[in-house]
Length: 593
Image (cartoon, rainbow, N blue to C red; front, side):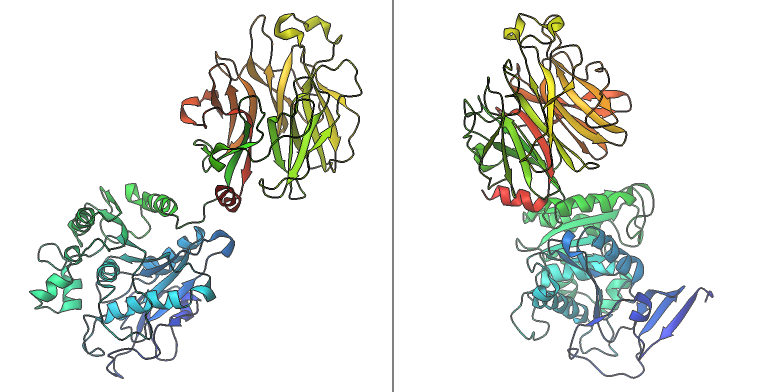
């Protein structure tokens, strides 16, 4: 044997010496055991890490607990492969468990007994006994270990896949007398290049011989050919196999999948061109992508804690019924909340409207919202909330009363300055008699510029000042923090010659000065009400295609701004909204409203 490997023959020293994890005994008393002093567990280690284990006498679970904050309680029991003659405990056990933890999933590596007449009265059922008890053990300790008893799966590689599929089809078999009535049925199974069948020409002969004996035939072969044991009650399944597997034919997975399909059991199968047998979490080529596909399957089936999502605040009609909210998990598909009814009815301002609602989450943990209260008022509305559901008393902030000739105060927004710990509120107003060089009789004579005030507590406000004068009628500014400073997205409101598009200006400081406006980033349609957020390191700007009565979006790329309007979907009637990032828990709470 190579020097890199050595056997550790152990009675008093357990596998945890190498795994650095505490093993949990599966049984107080192993069922149907035969005592044998000659039969001693063996560990094959490499560089101090257990790679394989043989001659298991005391089955255990090695737990890998995920971060509780990233978990929804899903747990998976992992059955390493090894033809029922050994366990590939590291590659198909510990490494997989560590990967599960990165997804927020608790994992338990099952060191199950390998069939042997030396220590078992019935070697054929011993692995199944261990698998059933492992599921029951997790459910009994669900509260203690913070597991969801309805989200416990079984996973197996190769012969471990046979054990996992055996449990999935024989979970009700009375192979021992349990201590209680806890169910041994897994909620889902994951089978990776699994041995499924014991039928000649399809089975893996070594696994069959070790489990059933070299002369097995007839009823016992049929019973443990698990593709023949599937019913409508078999758990949903995820399968992975390589077409060029010369050890375990791909037909094992295919036949199991077809039987699941026949019984209308939810299932998904991924077959790869190459990879052979034993590729674990993937080696190279297409088979290396299966963990990503599996991660998506776990997410879709609610076995992972969904990450932060997004909420869109918007109004409908004229804004008379108040605040509407939609949510999205990816920033592309948006769904209504509360059946698209209002979360907050407007109460302040001349016209008591709630148009252009802008919400940000402050450093105090509160959501702060400002909005347009009227077409012709000199102030804006304000309220705050801990959860986007229950709101404080609405207030009217008279930001433009100092200027007698102010005609309006529209589309207020908030941006937080981390450096000064200050909120800046900014909006568009027309003051009669100012900026006459761009005054037009179009648009009822409105000639807007962007003004602002600052506050630390939404109680005291600085004197209103001019923020941005681009040399044209400007409205609907929104400002985001970037690595370079601050970026303002704004609408050029010029009608003659027509603009009605979105542009960009930048500044090192939140309060400016801002650069000259860029070329348009939107196309040949009228756009307003921009709101921007970074998703997967890409800036996306959503906007109201108000003449087309629908929402659009552009995405920043290395080649410029790409129109992705056809890729996004918003609720019908959505008007001038803002997007914010929120937690999955907050979205779940909003869904219940």
